[in-house]
Amino acid sequence: MCGIVGYVGDKNAQDFLISGLKRLEYRGYDSAGIVTLAEDGVATLLRAKGKITNLEEKLAHARREDRIGIGHTRWATHGEPSETNAHPHQAGPIYLVHNGIIENYKELKQQLKEHEFKSETDSEVLAALIDSFYKDGAHPLVNAVVQALKLVKGTYGIAVVSVKQPDEIVVARSGSPLVIGVGHGETMIASDASALVGHTKQAIYLNDGEVATVKSDSVEIKTLKAEPVSAKVEEIETNLSAIQKGGYDHFLLKEIMEQPESLIETLRGRVNEREGTVRLGGPGLSEAQLRKIKHLIIVGCGTAYHAGLLASYYIEKFTPEITIEPVVASEYRYRQVYIPKDSVALIVSQSGETADTLACLREIKKQGVTTIGIVNAIGSTIAREVDGGTYVHVGPEISVASTKAFTSQVVAMVIFGLTIAQAKGVRTSILRPYVKEIAHLPETIRKTLESVKDSVNGLAGKYAAYEHGIYLGRDTAYPTAMEGALKLKEISYVDANAYAFGELKHGPLALIDDRFFEIALLPKGELYDKAISNLQEVLARGGHVLAITNEESFDLPVDDVIRLDVDAELFAPLIMNLVLQLLAYYVTVAKGYDVDQPRNLAKSVTVE
Ligand code: M6R
Image 1 (cartoon, rainbow, N blue to C red):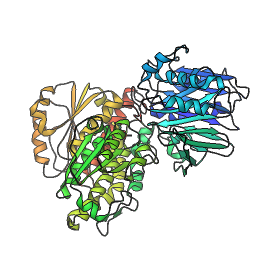
Image 2: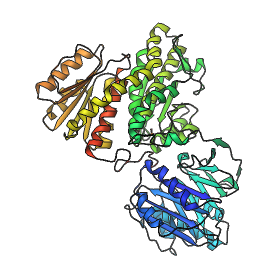
Image 3: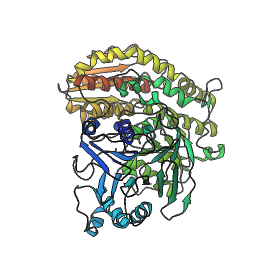
């Protein structure tokens, strides 16, 4: 989604802005722009449609030594991607960049007769509104910003500069993240701390309803009601290697391959294999509170939803007297749902900023239900608003397609389920097999990735030729199939859908023909034979099947088989998902598409 950067200090602002915007490229964007101000207030505005390299071409003819500026990557909401609609937007002496959506922009626009609008954006309306209160510098910029924001309905993270005050940036947030990096003689702002990595380790995360005046040597924060806020400086944990490709061609492949290490971080200090127990500090629930839980709601979008769905299949297997309801956040937020007493809601999000998930969190909190975050991005809005939480600690996930976060979200939620089961007195003999497999998962994942990577690559060309994919599974393999299909469609643009094997006869079987391939997930276990019978039906209709199984006796005449020799029976589907991640990656490479930044998508979906 849109990205914001800003700089005020003693170094070249254009350099910081461009490098910061490049760090935010992964969030998805369709145009970009920067404005810098010289000491005498002369502004240099550069904007370009498309990639940041287009902006750099313009910059080559407009190099400045300016020490202050703001920049933006835009993901179009109001108005097509174009140079005119790109930010920063100008209104009189001020320039503004904005993430979010101004919902009442049409009404506001009608009142701003003096401004000649150049773009179709809601953001330019906000710029003009601020300018109308600024009165050409007669009032402090921060006061004008506050007055304008009081009239705004919607979400925003904004940064504003004025040619009349070329030594300060005013920033504010409501529903769209903003972080201030505190350096020595310089202060930086960004919508995502990854833009600050390597420049400073000290960060102030702005809260909703706060506005800050940022100078090279000071940060002054207050609320929109003019109450002063004392800034809490936190440490940025990310290091440079975590946001670089580290020798891989794409972030996606790096993130798939680093899952053994990222899962070790998720498990650190949480699993005691010898005792067969788990421990989670973050949720902050006492044994008595855990014992009382009767209903678990799991809220997420996309991959985070699939992680919740898969975790729910596991948790209900070993936790008695509990109902689990995994829900899609964009739907749940508008449903008239009765939430039973003694419920806890798990709020699952890699970015911690997803608008629909955040809205659900707020709705659920209003009903007095305890909320627990399963979040990756440290200091993100969801992480800060939940009652308690468990970070998955997988480090920055840069590629738009979520991979390592999924694996760790599932495991973190299963561990949470195990803490409930422990508190409810479930026998260790029932829980121990789960704990044992979880403890060994990083190693199992490492071995699997090493053993299947080349064979999956070898198959990619063949499967890239199909127009459609059907992913099939039962029980825990069904949510896995859903996640696999999502991965393929979002990066390779192949139409892929998942079905529970048992649903085939109820419709999807009619689809099978030469334009389709089918992925059959066949983990060992109780339902293996049932899945095999369903697969026979596909083969009898001429299906083109790639089977993924850990059952040695599998011998059906499918097109291809990936056999997994895994030390995990319960979590075999999670291991099969690694194959699906690699398949999506290599098919996309074979098709020549942009793996890390698929069309139309953004990493962090901060608008509804
Ligand atoms: O940051 P979140 O986990 O809240 O994001 C949720 C979805 O937008 C995300 O998982 C999306 O579906 C991914 N692009 C899937 O790979």
